[in-house]
Length: 47
Image 1 (cartoon, rainbow, N blue to C red):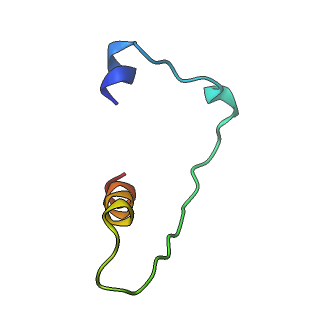
Image 2 (image 1 turned 60 degrees about the vertical axis):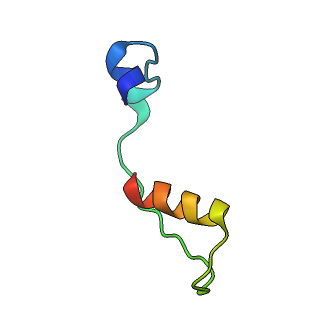
């Protein structure tokens, strides 16, 4: 978000975006997720 706020990046096609989509994620039930999967899950949960 900081790059958008600073003007380094700009959004395009804002006039064509009329809704947000909800995504559902499923992952293996194992208590021991791989580090890569754990980072991805944490990132997606936060954003």
